[in-house]
Amino acid sequence: MKQEFNAAYWQNRYQCNQTGWDTGGITTPLKTYIDQLPDKSLRILIPGCGNAYEAEYLYDNGFKNVFVADVAPAPLENFAKRAPHFPKEQLLLQNFFDLEGPYDLIIEQTFFCAISPDLRKAYARKCAELLKQGGRVVGLLFDTNFEHDGPPFGGSATEYKTYFEPYFEFVHFEQAYNSIPPRQGSELFINLKKK
Image (cartoon, rainbow, N blue to C red; front, top):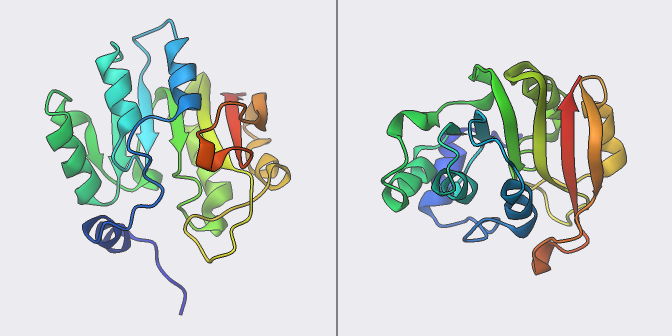
């Protein structure tokens, strides 16, 4: 029987502390990208946000239009406790594919690798749908295959390009030079601009 990666599955992973992807803070590539953004008014979405370290960093650095979404309540509750100053109405307990936009920027951090690979084409299409014209998807994708069944699910740059090409220009799509040590050499930094 095929595993269903639904809200109950992810809620259980958080409740059992099976969160090996959680780095305990914002990762270097995303921090570096955020630090050079001049426009603090950007409307930003972080789907499959988990413990949402990126949202906390953004909000604490003046980006007040940050929205985080997850299907499981546990990570949103964890984040609300850790960052009580973050607006509760910007915590979205919702399936990514049911979200509505528009947004200027979607931050990708371990959400793409968490969804079933058969949803990747739909993910790229939904990102384009959620973004304003010229909006961007920026973040990290694993450029490796894992020896275990996912999640996380791996893949390659060649594969990923086929999903995004219909909707996005590739501003940056290459191996991240500043990954955290455990992920060095195994992730792509992407900056995709909606056509």
